[in-house]
Amino acid sequence: MTDGTEMLSMSVREFAAATAAKRPTPGGGSVAGVVGSLGVGLGEMALNFTKGKKKFAEHEEYYAHLGGRWAKAREMFQQLVCDDVAAFANYQEASRMDDSPEKDEAMQVAIAAAIAVPREAAKLSLALLADLRELADKCSKWLVSDLVASAALAEATCRLSDYNVRINVPSVSDAAAAADLRTASADDLARSVALREQIEAAVKDALP
Figure 1 (cartoon, rainbow, N blue to C red):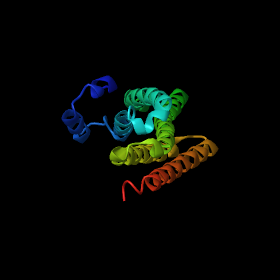
Figure 2: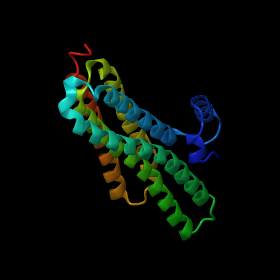
Figure 3: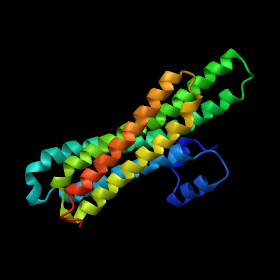
Figure 4: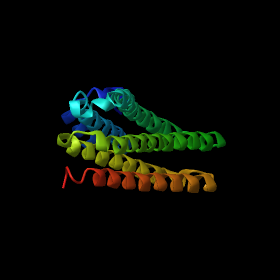
């Protein structure tokens, strides 16, 4: 199994081939981290081409703050690639234990980690979408296609994260906690769709 650090060092071609290979990682969780990172990157590109222009000079302080936030967010998405691989490794290790109360406990810990990673990815995606919504009316019209592409990738990351939550939730032993996780994930997905639609509406004049 390829570890997360090795994945982050792969070329695009290598990562795509590794995803296609008959092995468990990289899988949907790792791909979600990469997609989220690329989404941030597109937002950063739109920001970097906008800042410094006279038309938007009054927003330079805001751009500097946002640039710092997004640089950290990109790194956090990449760390989630590693976290997803580690969570799956923990799950595999727990599943190979002999049947016992200790195995049941280890499995619940592993499932919790497998859910925590996509939940964090969803939170990062929503934060990115909120920032993109705020940037929408402070962005060069020549970069709005990249801005909305960033939003689309953020929404996709949230959707991938919801899939990963839903596949793992049935294994959570606490039925009430499982229901809460499922609802929270669905709510976040709905918020991501709404935010992406708001961003598209905000730039409709520049991107008819």
